[in-house]
Image (cartoon, rainbow, N blue to C red):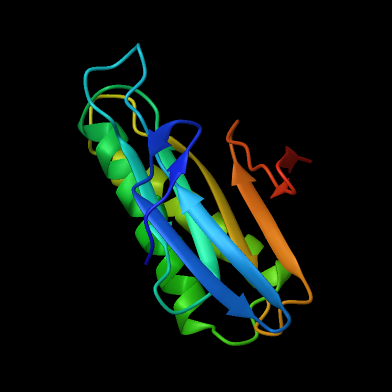
Length: 148
């Protein structure tokens, strides 16, 4: 673990990970913003595997908190149990299960229960990586000080 600042904000999770011939520098952070009093984002930078993800709860209550935590726990749990050998098919399947579990968790609440999610998973040899998204979340590649 190392400390960084990103876009003049302290980060909550940072990790440098060598995967094959590639070194990934994973940095994640979150702010409350101007709309809600609390932050319902859930960050995950895996301590052992090349997995980084963020879920952003929609709304301002327990449904947002439940959705983000359910989505993240489901996604990461499924990827870990299928490691190694996680590729696009397994990533899509884990995302679909996360979406289903969020809907099931929210069925008992009388409020908005949902989240967006973005995750990056790299192969063990570092030759390929995949990004999966639910909703309007975004992922940026920063290389040489430029996004792309």
